[in-house]
Image 1 (cartoon, rainbow, N blue to C red):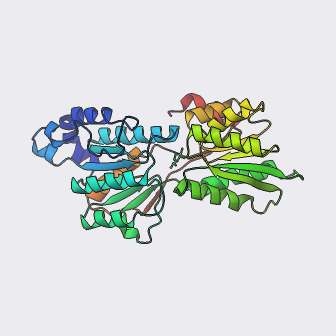
Image 2: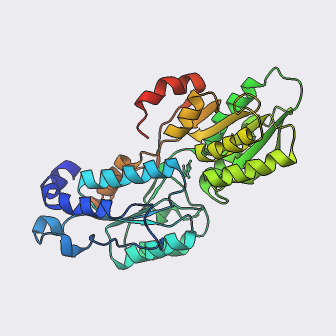
Image 3: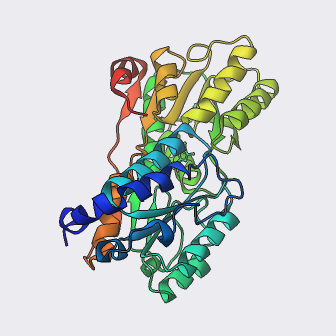
Length: 345
Ligand code: GYE
């Protein structure tokens, strides 16, 4: 079944409704974090035509609104759902697993066609995933993985290879300091504890630098992927260690918060302390272009189109790849300067 064929007739009928739903349901405005059904997004607003009755309903349980990456990811999902003509039910879990589980249970009760979510942490999903399976609702993982042994609990996982991202960061660093004899003191700002990107970006980086005994991670703590926490933890690092050479932040937002702390301490980010981060969102790329971040590993948040394609295929009963890996690159300060004018997010 082709998406264009099936959905073409639906677009006109559902465009207005979806527009209302997407606008009234932004990730930043959810107050309870568990609201799975936004106002104006129910069957009452749909015209009672046979075409509208066939419209695919997608329940999406988002992590939160913790970073620039997440904002771009949410927009990509909402825009692509609208373009495809799906009825999107969207919820923001405010970085709490219990909120995501509640949202998924609500989608099961509502008998949506497909559930997609970006699991805030890797563990603890088996029960709710079994509930979805028993209800015969396919689940698609986007962005972050789960550690469930039973892979029949989800149809596919669409997202980046976070270990690879950590390796790219470590490789650049090992190369930069390959002729240095003295110890290089590294501090690490980890993402949300227990999340796939925090676990994997840490592991990939450690793996890549381990054969260089002069590269030493002297402190490593979570900054929860937020700017505020990144700043706070960097302040503590700077107090505890007078000799920090490198900061490795698991995302741009934490690096940007840390830059504020570094500047407040009278140091020059990018010069006195070499900074590496992951994401390559606009604010991060701007800091890189200014020389405050030295190297950014790209993590692409624009997963919406791939997700909608997968939803369509799953509903059509097509066999889909169990793992869909997003393609991404890396940026030095010079690269960032060149790429910035065309950056969408
Ligand atoms: O790197 C970070 C966000 O899961 C890949 O989550 C995502 C990460 C992203 O908060 O900025």
